Image 1 (cartoon, rainbow, N blue to C red):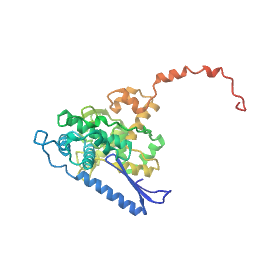
Image 2 (cartoon, rainbow, N blue to C red; image 1 turned 90 degrees about the horizontal axis):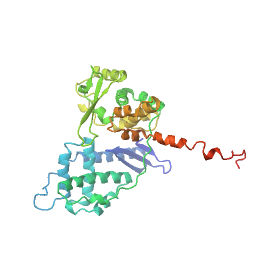
Image 3 (cartoon, rainbow, N blue to C red; image 1 turned 90 degrees about the vertical axis):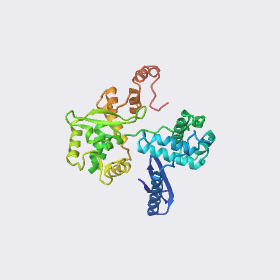
Amino acid sequence: MPLWKDPKTGRWRYQFQHLGQRYSKTGFDTQKAAKAGMAKRRGELEMEDRTPPSPPMPSASDSGPLSLEALMVNYLRLAERSLAPVTLRYRKTVFRRFLAHLGNVPAASITANHVEGYLLKCPTNNRFNKERTEIMRLFNWGSRRSLVPLNPVFLVDKLSVEQPKKVIPTTQEMSKILLAAGKDRPLLLVLYHTLARIDEVLRLKWEDINWERHEVRLWTRKRRGGNWQYDWLPMNAELEKVLRDLWQKRRQDEWIFWNSRTGGRYTDRFDLMRRICQRAGVRRYTYHTIRHFVASYLYDKEKRPLPEISKLLRHRNYQTTERYLQLVDPNLRETMRLLEGGIGSILPEARADGN
């Protein structure tokens, strides 16, 4: 819910996400004022995203010390060729904020205190750690190329963060979500029947469907090296029916989920899942929870073996799948059973009065 009234203060508040970061503000007298404030803040962030990077600066081989801005521009020039657009935009946003905080100082003069001073402005420990990682990547890159003598971020420790509770929909909630999806139900059904990530589904092209072999090809770069790699997965009858219906209704022959307003594919659909959950009357879930739901359903309800589910999730090792499903080591269950019939069996039974 992006707009709501605080029952304690009676003031209106907005909250939304942009490039993985949460933005919120309270203190508005009316819902209209809060909506206008949110629109203004969104516009500011979108304008930052559209701001082109600074023009190329002299490299370390030229006269004078390499500036922080030059280090960023040189790094981003290569990163643009390998990073996903949403990742690149977020990295640029972090760099832009870091540069505004320090100014265009010589890159080699930046110390751990400079980095820490900037990161302490982050509103949460989680954001502190995320932005630390992005700045760490920048200086790692510069250090490997001898553009800076060392990485000052190594001396900045991560902050403690409470492990988030992984909540997935119940079977009843998932049914409500699918029913409430309406015209966007095919997108959720493809996510459901492929266990894919949202970006992988939005990138699907018709050439990724092999009707003869009843297979679908999913592309990912979430592997070591960041290279695009693909896996073929079998299509079940329900998935094939959904895709054939989309094929018959298609208005172009490239993208499966085509955005008629832009003439290309959807790059993200952040607000869609929120609206679907709101219509379904369930708590707010993300697209990724569908992946978690199906994996847990296959393991808990259908008793499918872990290696099989790991292949469907396209994990490279079973340990990743174990963490994903938050599984308890079966050996621990056997160990805990050794306590049964032990000291508890010789204790006198509690009397009715509890003494």
